[in-house]
Length: 506
Image (cartoon, rainbow, N blue to C red; front, side, top):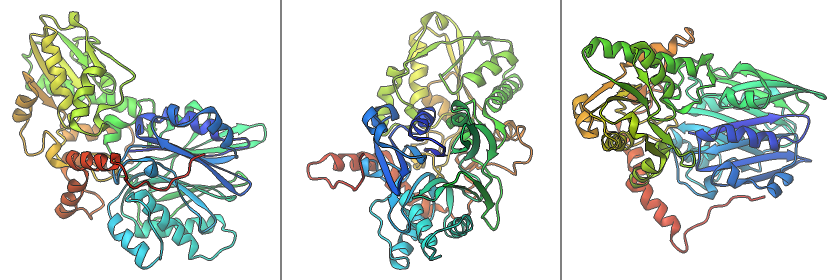
């Protein structure tokens, strides 16, 4: 899961890209990068860490140019490390930098094709570098000294023909402009906005509308599935549908967890979606356990707060903040390694004993993935004096890996995989566990935009909408991306003499 920004403006864009990346920091805390262009040259700064740590004043002073792109990264395919920070760069044709959110499910095949047929070299195991080189090759085959918007769109059409999976991308072509495009199913989000300046229109592409809001851009709309946006060096906006077949099937887990609630995605308010999730949960609780005594409803900060509030209102039960959050601990869900996640939960949350002592408590979370967080939180609630601890998940059981850009690659690490609700209930130590029904979750999102054909719900129902994911693929991904494999890879990178990847540093 990553965050993307691309801006073409009338003044230096680096400060605006920096601000946008801080707003999108929730989408990736592993690494960050910015590329700008001025006078036919790229300026690049990227490194591991949070946005505030990667960019210093002297970096920003050297990132000059009126167009640029930015990226915050969480690794979902490939390793971690400075060389894997984005944007990536190729010098031919023209000079192209690209940042990517998502996963290519046919990256292995494309890697072979790029080497054997396209004669292009890849230096990392990142599928983002694969995507960049596919785009670059398709542009190069056109043989144009000065590419037009039509040429850019022809290249994107070829990308859609060759690439499979979930992908949204922003690219920067030296002296020509910024391009943004989205996969033909619209799995990963992308929006475009405009802003008036003294010298004319300025345009911005981003993963979420909230980044536009903060910088004073008005939302023009979502980039449609299969659509490409090109903002040329003169500040003119071009857009075109580049996929032969496209359908809007966005990832529903954005509404559950990843997106900020103040974002609009595919004309759907994430805030309202989460409110409806809470109301649907309340309805299910009333129908399945009408006699259940609940003294107080407490959210697990922060992503479940909206659902918990609306659930409490619908049930006419007190809503209370029972856990105080340490804002300086990152999102535990995306932390590498089970031991680090376990350690961070207690660092991140501390109970307020008076909200628990002697009470029957309903805890509400956005989802249950590995079960690490909720198990520890239930223990904390009991230690704080709760009489009974019930647990509600605003999402259905997560039983399947996600292969389109969310780090759930290992089925065996998902607590609900191969287990009943009762078994999960016992494992996390709850007195009662209730999950959202998948039909209700879909309806909560679809109500915001009836034109949406459906959603990618693969983590819940195991249906992979690109049609190219089988068990062999899942087994291969799991072997590469499970916690044990990642721990081993990190250890190897820390050894003396470990190979250092190529990357630029301004």
